[in-house]
Length: 152
Image (cartoon, rainbow, N blue to C red):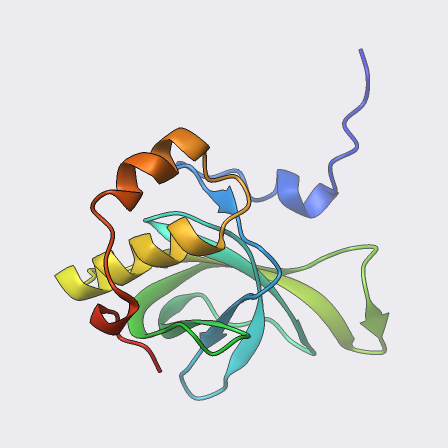
């Protein structure tokens, strides 16, 4: 039997998810906005939560948070998403400079407004790498104008 080459930190992130997560392209970022802001690149996302990596010297505490999702091209920004930090851990074998390390943060979304749900669906359709062509074509028919989104 072939040994898994998956990094150890991912083995620790086994969760009971209601929604499958999909990979996000390089332009998607998440920002935790409470007493201390953590900004990092989104790794994957679903309707129920996301995971992102960021650089910091210490872990975020588990618990409630407010999250923003944005793109580097400034065409999309979804603000004030209620969230719960499920896990925050160092990514062993990745970037490290003294006490500063690359970290992996997994969050679960709280109760979203109808508008936030629609905007989140738009982000997933527009910014994920594994979105299937058949699903994309189905959703495209009922698509929304960018002006209808809450763009920053």
